Image (cartoon, rainbow, N blue to C red; front, side):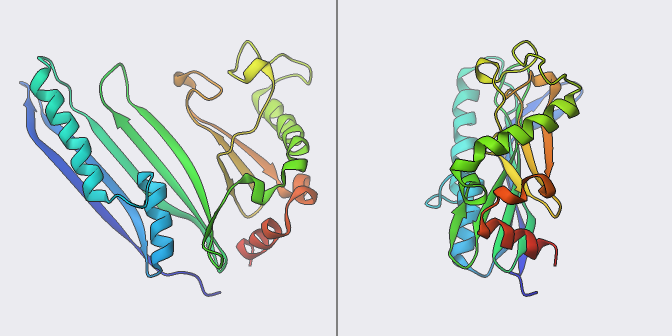
Length: 231
């Protein structure tokens, strides 16, 4: 099948304010890596996913981050090195569909840094982003959540009627699926990032639902994408 060709680009910018101790030498940096396509519309999608806007650039984002640190460095008697890393890669691609996964990490002080894994989706022929509503229509998402809860409880070793309030951060103890999802060849993957449903120490939580359980809930567009991923 013909799919979009791409290559990866890396970019890194360092602060000139170097911190030295008797053991280490370190400095703040901003780093990204991302795929570049020949299609400018797809590249704008990648840029929006990576930077949060299609009107900025990697260089401007790096300059802003480093400048903010440099200003902080001048005023704080005990500055710490800051870090911003975002790495976007192609998670899945077919003639009509592109999925990106972004793994991001940042540290700007405090006990620890924060990290996240984010999936984003793109309809190539129509040049538009896709969200969960495009994969499972709103009227069927309650049923999707019910199926997902069964798999969640099994994966977590929970009884059918066991409360979710004590162990998890679900609103009012009611299970919910995140908007953060991926389409794989045989299942839907839902990913909860840190702090969404568990403390930081527990990290991220992955939940996979086989298509055999939810195929009847998928939109025609989603069924086409899944079929393409399995060709």
